[in-house]
Image (cartoon, rainbow, N blue to C red; front, side):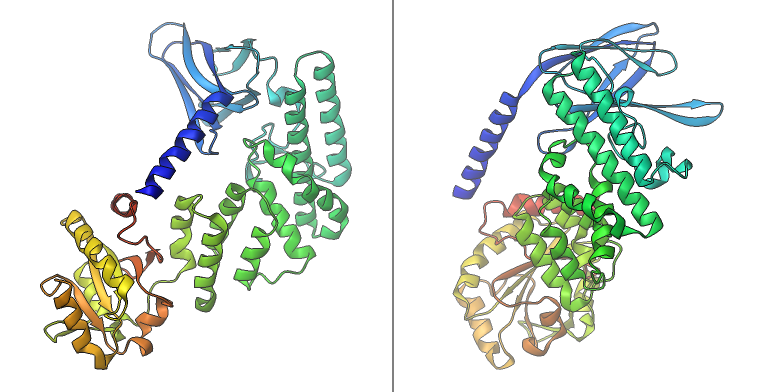
Length: 468
C-alpha cells in the first residue's frame, strides 16, 4: 500500500509539473471538404502522440482544435495521397512558439500545408536535410543517397555551413527565438553527423571521422534535448562506428550491451536500439540471464514494455522439459512438458518455494488468493517445491500446516538440483515467481511477489497483452 501511495503521489507531481510546462494552444486549420490531417509528436514522457483534425463537412471549413503543448516541442504534419497512381507523402514540421496562442494553417486540395499565422517557418523550408525532415528515416528512404556525392565529408560540411547560414538569417530577421535557433542548430548538427556516419559506413573509412565522432559524443547532452528528432538512426550508425573503430566483438553480446549502456545516452534511445538488435542476434544461453539482469538494473523499472517485448529474445525457451518430472501430493508423476501441453495457450505463473523457506510460506496465502482472482482467465498458477527427494514428508506437512492440502497445482520437483528446469530458470534464491507461456518462453523471469500491491494489476495487464 505504501508503495502504491508513493507511486500515486509521484504521478501527481509529474502531472502537475507537466501541466505547468505546457500551455493551452489553438491549432486553427482552413481545410478542404471532407478531409483529415494528423500532427505527430512525442509527449512529456517521450511517448508517441498525435493530434487529429477532421473536417466532415462537404464544403471548405475552418477547424479549431484546443490542445496543451509545450513551447519548443516539434510537431510534424504528414498526409499521404495518391498522384498518378503512386502514393505520395507530404510532411512539414514546426516548433511550437512560446508567445503565440493560436497557430494558423491552411490545407489546399492537394494536401499541401501553408502558414497563415502564429508559426513563422517550417523546419524543412529552413534546413537542407537528408530527407527534408528532422525525423530521420531509415537509409532506404533517404533521397540524398541518389546523389553519389551527397554524403561525402566535403559535401556534409558545405550542407552544415549552408544550414547554419540559413538559421542565422532567420534569427537576424526575428523569425525565430533563441530557443528555436538552438533547436534548429541541433537538428542541423545531427544531420551533419548522420551524413558523416553513413559515408564512413558505406566506404569503410571510420578512422577518417574519428575527430568528428569525439565531438559527437561530447555533444550528446545537447543533441538529446531535441527529443522529437528521431535520433535512433544516428545512434545506430554511431554504434557501428564504435564496433568498427574499437574492434568490439559482436559475438560477445553481453559485453556489447553493457558497452552501449555505458555510453550514457538517453535511456529511451538506448533501449530502442537494443530492443531492435537483440531480436536479431543469437545469444548464448550462459549469457542470456546476465543480459536480462543487466538491462533490468539499467532501466530501474523505466520502459517496462520494452523489456517485456525483448525478454523472449534475451531468454531462450525452456529445453528438455520432458526430463523435469513433477510429483503430485498423491504420488503421481507428470513431466513439465506434459503440464505445459495441458495448459496450451495460457500464461503459467510458477511459484518456486520450499518447506524450510519462511518467506515463501508467508507469500503462499497471497498466491492462493490471487489464484482465485484469475479463475477462468487464461492464467494458470502452479507451486513447485524445491524440497529434496528425501524431504517429501516435510513438503506435505508444510502444505497441511498452511491449509493447502487441498489446493490445486502443487508439485514437488524431483531431483531439483540436478534438474534441467532448475538450471534453465537460473534459480539462486526463493521465493521466486516466474511467468512463462505454454511454449516455455519467458514472459517475465522475475515477477512480483504476490503480496506486492501491484501484483494483481500487473498480471492482469500481461494477460490482456497475451490474449491480444
